[in-house]
Amino acid sequence: MSAFTLDASLTMTWCFQDEADSYADRVLNSLTHSHAVVPEIWPLEVGNVLLVAERHVLLASSNSSHFLDLLRELPIQVEYSTQQRMFSVILNLARDFCLSSYDAAYLDLAFQTGFPLATLEKSL
Image (tube, rainbow, N blue to C red; front, side, top):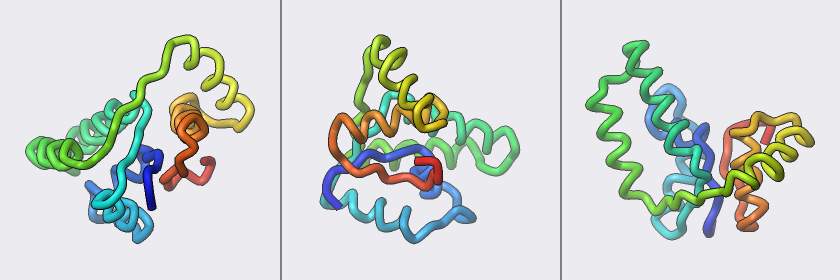
């Protein structure tokens, strides 16, 4: 797999053993010879999943910190959108495909870059 757009649903399987997935493992392994791009909401989504897991005592904060350190070492590039794009193109994609605006941001980035979208979200 060359460059690809990565979403948070797939990313978080790398953190939780009970969510292990062979496709997600292949995507992670591909980062040894490729890179991923993510929309600017990706770090917030990842952080939110970690916080919720900590609050439900499913993950220690030290494990969250370790996971974030590991993510920082991967070739994952955050791409930024303008407010105008968020309020027009991304919102329209969400409407057209019955997606959340968050999921539409991943789809928009995949369309913009021409990179395939690595996701576990059925709607995408």
